[in-house]
Length: 416
Image (cartoon, rainbow, N blue to C red; front, side, top):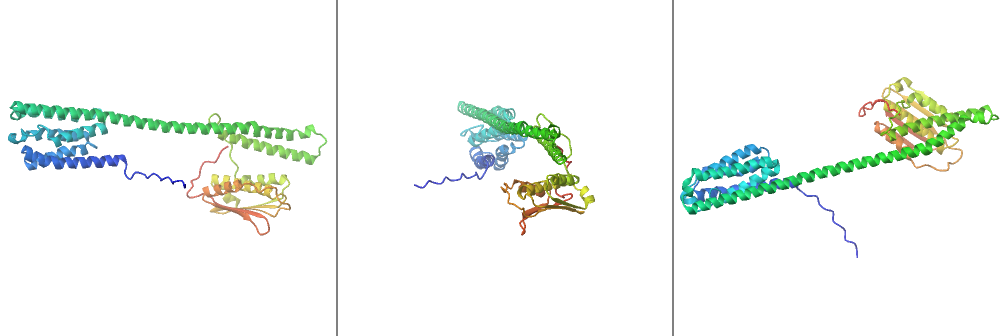
């Protein structure tokens, strides 16, 4: 049988907060619609006063969301006046001093204030509401003149106070539980973030340790062997001695770069050295180092004065793009002649690195990470880069970088 495809869970259309607000509005309107006719017909309250006091009573839960103290005062006044303006002949046959809609409104009001603003604020409407209803029999003794009416009023007061107190306790417990849950959620998120940061630091430290223990050690050995070759092997000629010196210099430069990388990776216990990164002025030295390796490289620099005013980030990117392009040409087109052209004007720097067809095919073509890195450097500065084969079998890398990118403010010069 074909496996049944699981349905993608739908996102809720409304949030719980919105649903609660809608429910409260609906409850307030429903209570108001019931309180006005009941208060007028069953208790003999004049219709205008029923509308006015009913609006004050039923509108208090909504007002309590933003102004709990003003809502408490409004509710207390309405709850105090409403039982006093009744007709005894009618009111003695109905619950008094709290009608059923008024009782439900009282409970709703206490719950809303307690849940939203806390138990301390929620205790105010509970106490004031109960006190207002206790004063009503004192001011209207005719409503409790007989044992039957007195017992009915006492039962009404007890039921109302009990339900309101229960709502107060439940709202306080639920609000406290939700607050604790939110705190736990925030703590979990914070712990997860700290855990990810710690894992990142540990991974960077591990990489730094591997680089230091393996690569840096090997480069140190190469540098020492190349530097001492002229003393250990006296019979080598001057050309070989110069070649060994170049190897030693390259190894020392590589060790400097390695120390910079270790400083970046191990920021928790080691600050990076404040040596300036290479820029456009270092391109000739870079080309000379390639020439010393036996590669024929031509260099043309135009607009040197304009290039000197380039943004530091642009200068670093220019050097790195030329360095990567030369490295790719040496690796993938061994024996081919390489031409480097650097042209700077008032707005941009244009780079062109071209190598001819190699006399022999390289063993591998690489993974393309170098090209992607060069393209990312260009695009981050608002420039562009293109790379591809030529009709004659060679390869050309062309890049254009703005001197001061409008969308990229000039940063401080990168340090290593």
